[in-house]
Image (cartoon, rainbow, N blue to C red; front, side, top):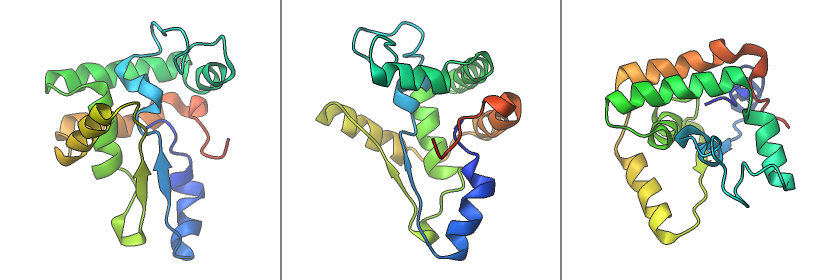
Length: 150
């Protein structure tokens, strides 16, 4: 939800040439569930290792954190977790299109987590208030938006 600069730059080129796009990590390594706020040792937001430093450099910016907090608050009013909101938005409201063969790559650390993620996708589109809040993120974070190409 915060890596959308490709919508203006990359997607028109892909569409012109009939190339599909596969979005990866729609939950931003648990960012939209708040996993970055109190990272566990070895987690993706633990800055003591390379991957943690990478994720922190991309996502841990005040504007992005504030926008994610707002999305979590609005989603919670509808009984939806931040993680579920991110997956459902990506599947049902983003620029991805089945017509072009686009897809979503999700990770899971267990069969149970994979099943939970698949169940979330099957819940369908988000309530409009939640989808609108997520759509507004890009305008709120502006220059802090995570670039699709790095």
